[in-house]
Length: 422
Image 1: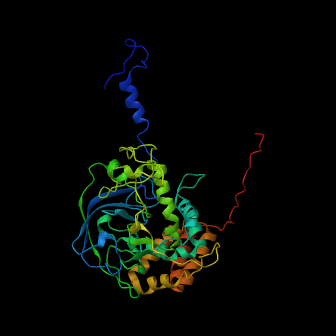
Image 2: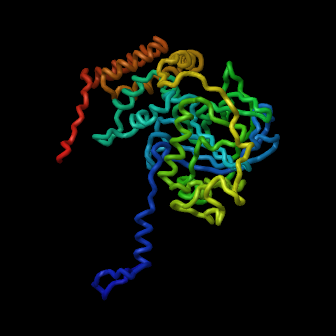
Image 3: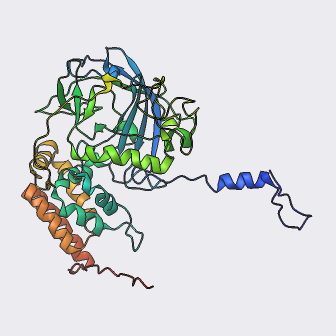
């Protein structure tokens, strides 16, 4: 392990030096693709314990009776930064939980904020691009960030939340956790209702929270790569009793999350120990592929239907029925009341000192954008509350005067196409 095998003291390396080639070939392949979002994070392990009976709402065995415990894995993260980015940036914090239940794994993905920037998952790639690096300069670009936010006023609630004191939680230990999506719960009688999962009591006048259980973290990862970097959460992993709702962001993520895991970790990522549903037996018709870690289901048939001893349909996993009757179309959700909840947050939830810090934080970040983007964003804030927009505008005016910032018209990008003969 210290010296190459060479032809003499100064001679060339020998191809037969398999110790070197094995070591170097593995080294060349140590890195796997980084997460597109939530790249910087940490994990912990523990258990979930049911403390309140909700079986009248949900038949999932994870909630079967008070006192029941289920092993869990949790990953905390930032969102926009790369793997080596700072923990202290103003950015939402990811909060994802994997429940290792006897019905298979249930993955609940969420953040430390109860709302999100967009309503329609079609916008997700563009939203993430706007938070990442400029494709020309490879630098973070306030024009990109604020241009997107100001063009999508639906982001106002989340942006206001982000630039308030809640946008910088005091570490993973002292932050709230909210399931990002609305889910459909189904009880043993097949009766459905919609719900959102929260991990800390959050006052809500219209929809009082129902206590369910407690989350206990009592083990640190033994190895970061094995148990955190390879830890993959998939919102489509739902046990009987928990189903997808028409939530457009959830609907998009049902495909996107497992698809990015297949790209990042391989087609058999569910066989990686930290992702494996180890409390139940997996039997299906999926075979082969990179990183097949077990017996590949032996000699069991790999087609269905068949006449041999292979897995059959499990009726208890059949989804509940629901009617869909509206016309198919691309419906715009951009203007579904973007201001009322933000106004309540600004006037009723925050006190005067918190409002001052919110406006200072927002102006401090918005000042880097061009004037026409600043103007558009301030108009959105005024639509929430005149005081909100006026305070931010006053702070921007002070900064723009000091920096002698001048107005520039937006520069349109003209695509350049290569001639087919080149």
